[in-house]
Image (cartoon, rainbow, N blue to C red; front, side, top):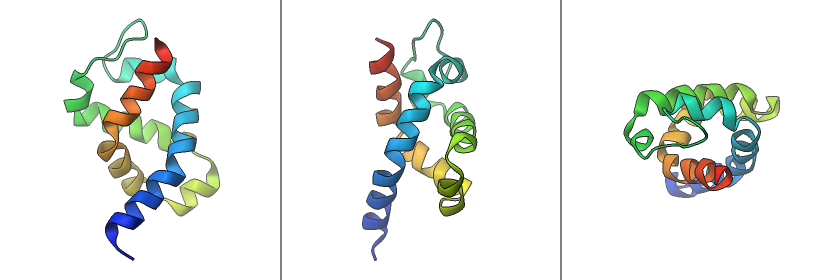
Length: 95
């Protein structure tokens, strides 16, 4: 199986749980990204440290079976690779 198809399958499987976490924990995640009053700036896109912090926080909130199947370094890479889409999700729901 190619890396591209594995990556897209991983994205398909993680998008739902991550979206649910972002929706439920928006008030906690937004300040981690340098946002205030529900706003997330585009500077967060360039801040790897903040994105890694959010990824670690979100990883702990994933269902146990997902955490067994997807190790934290792989999840952090997923978040970093999909940061724009995830931040769009935070911004769209906050608006």
